[in-house]
Each structure stands twice: as C-alpha cells, then as structure tokens.
Length: 291
Ligand code: KG4
Ligand code: ZN
Image 1 (cartoon, rainbow, N blue to C red):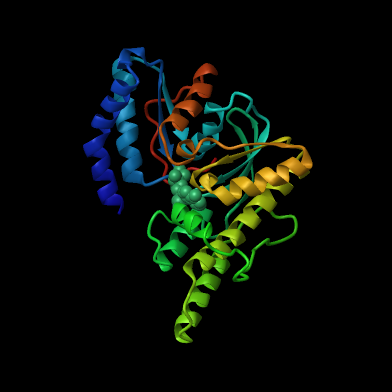
Image 2: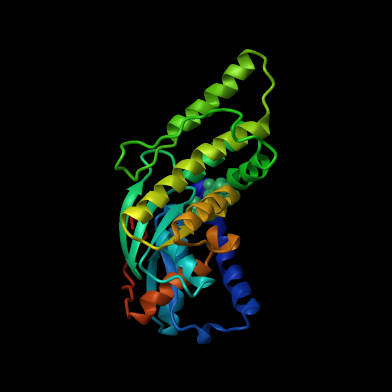
C-alpha cells in the first residue's frame, strides 16, 4: 500500500538515521557524503528519502549522490569480498526486477536481458500466497522446498528464443495455479512441499542456466548474485556447482546484504564519491528508473 509505506517512511526516517549513527558510533560530522536511492520504486517513499538526504547533505555542506536502487544491489557484492572487481557478470533478481547485467566498470552497466512479465521474486511471492505459505514468499518456498521433491511435478521452464537472456515467469505461475485448481476439482490432496520444490526448481534452473550461458558467451570469469532472490539456497548451490565445473568463480553477498539495505546504497555511493560523480540538488525521484 504505497500511501501507508510513504507515511511510515516519514514517521521512521529520523529514528532510523539516529539509530544507525548511534550503533556505528559516528556522528553526522564524520560522514563524507550522503548517498540516497532516487529510483526505481514507489514514488512517495522515494521522495521521503530523497528530500531527507538532500536536507542532510545541504546542511552539512557535504557531497550529495543519487543512486539507482539496482546499482545498489549490485554494489552489495563489493562490501564483503574485496576480490570482486569489475568486469563481472551479475544476475540481479528481486521483487521487481530480474536482469542479467555485465558490469564493465564501477557504474558502467550493460543489460543483457530482463523479465518480460513477472520478476522472479514476484513469482515466488505469488505462488507462496496461493500455497498458503505467506509473505515474503521466497524464504517460505525456499524452506518448504527442503522438505519436498523437486521432481514431483514437471512445471514448464521458459527459455524463450535460443539467443535470448530475457525471462518470463507468468506461464510457470499459471501452470502452478492450474495444477492447484485441478487437484482441488479432483479432490486430490496437494503436497505443498512438493509443489514448492518443483516450482522453485523451475525458476532456479532458468536463472542459473541463463546466467552461466551469459558468463561463458561474454568471457566473464566472475559471476555475482544480487537482489533478494540471491538469498535462495538452491540458486546459490546450483551456480556454485556449475561454476566449479567451468573453472569460473562465484560470489554472493551474505544474506542480509542481498535483501534491501542501506549499506549497499552507501557502497554504490562510495565508488561515485571517489570518482567525484556528485548529483545536483534538483534531481527528482524516478519511479521507473532503469540501469
Ligand atoms: O531485493 P529485495 O529485498 O527487494 C526488492 O527490491 O524487491 O527482494 C525481495 C524479493 C521478494 O520477492 C522475496 O520473496 C525474494 O526477494 N526473496 C527470495 C528469498 N529471499 C527473499 N526469493 C527466493 N528465495 C529466497 N530465499
Ligand atoms: Zn531491492
């Protein structure tokens, strides 16, 4: 609910900044610059953060840096592994996006593919709801899948055209919903864990295969995972195995750095800061900002 989200941003932003400063034992005067997300996302929430950050940077007379949220997810990879340096290939999969991106240099991106309908995380959330596993769906399905058989139901995998790095998850979503409906009509008891595991395998097979193919075809030796879906245990294990076979290296941030967080925005801001790439105070929030 966008309206409630932005109202809560207003209520909490001050408290959260204070808490972050207190727990890191620093004061605002120690800060070198202020980085903030300006898109993509819900416009009301973006505007709250953006206005707040502008006010802080202006009053401290410190550099002000607008960050693309997806660039933040990618930059989470730099935080806990100093070996990760461009160029590399990354899968960025969250609740709103599913992209395969070549990171040519810090801040230089080439998007190879994206979803044509639902994002991967969105598919996890929708199927979880229909299985009665709640929200957010990714962790719930990940957990249920550990108790289920991924070969129990043969759901489709959408690879699209042979040379395409795009994704599509709406067909898979319909297929799971049809399966659940037909079980209900025939009065067949559904094994939730089996359906969760079979659905998860269908999503992860495509994500892993396309990411691996993109790395090999573009001669990239490092693969990184970014975004909330990068927490997925099957995705991590599958790509780890594939990478070992091909002699490439893989990195994924620790789970809390995969989900939305402020450290990843600071990381993206740091690389712009050292290049002197600051933003003007008149930048606006952009709900559909692309990489
Ligand atoms: O990046 P994120 O924290 O927020 C957005 O920018 O959207 O991603 C949230 C998404 C949700 O759809 C959630 O279900 C999914 O990431 N997610 C997972 C897992 N943990 C979170 N998806 C699959 N497996 C997980 N373990
Ligand atoms: Zn996110």
